[in-house]
Length: 331
Image 1 (cartoon, rainbow, N blue to C red):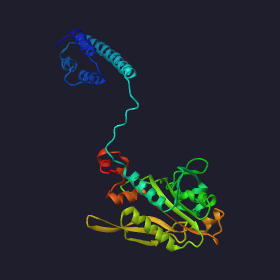
Image 2 (image 1 turned 90 degrees about the horizontal axis):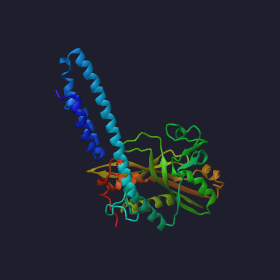
Image 3 (image 1 turned 90 degrees about the vertical axis):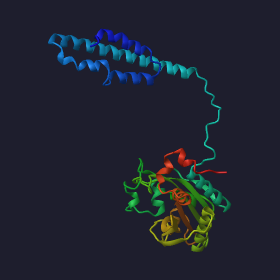
Image 4 (image 1 turned 135 degrees about the vertical axis):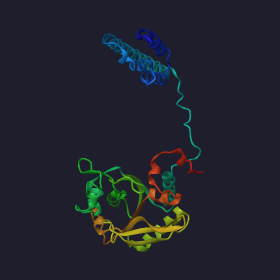
């Protein structure tokens, strides 16, 4: 069995030769590993006499304390040297960042397409706020106090009766009240829902919404606008249907489902809500519903991207995996 006093210089020499944190970690692990000399020595303690055990234990603890102190000192030296190296190294901040070809996030691609379409159609563009008031998010949209959307399980409530916007519709009152008529606007923004994240649901997503206010607006205008936008967006006129749905800010509320086919199978996919603006929404914005009418509809850009590019799990949009993003190119 190698004497403890002869091990100390050997260990100190090993510590002195270390030049990086990785080497230090590996060396430290080797010292406490199963094959280290001290570990092997401990197996022979049972064969020592009581007096030898007492002396051996004292010397072992002393050596362990010295080794830990030497390692801590060396770690400090290495870290200081690495920091000094960073301070003395010239970093050219004007060098262009490394890019990955012409890859672009699919949500950003869809967003650019939508903006291009509505700009050509003559709509003004607006951005909805991240944080909005209870009034704009609920009261102004004819959403009563008992509606489930006001529940803590569905909405992120902040202080002073403010919330994270649950829908881009929170801009409706402001636009109808302040903008000249006729009004043709598209609102883009991030919206937040207190939901469990899975393949088809997320707590945050990008949403777009159209609001049109004018005299003598009818369902024909609504359906024509939806058909034009969907045709431009998908490159063909998709098959869609309208069915009753409950949205307090339109009357009567309608759901729009798209027919989606993949792998030889098709099904109806819930896509958007729409219909004519509820008279109470117009009154809240000081607009006479007897003189003006309008329509509103909106959908999530995530759903559009999933349909266009055949993506079956929306969590892929937020993982920032280069292998995923490189599939989508522009130009």
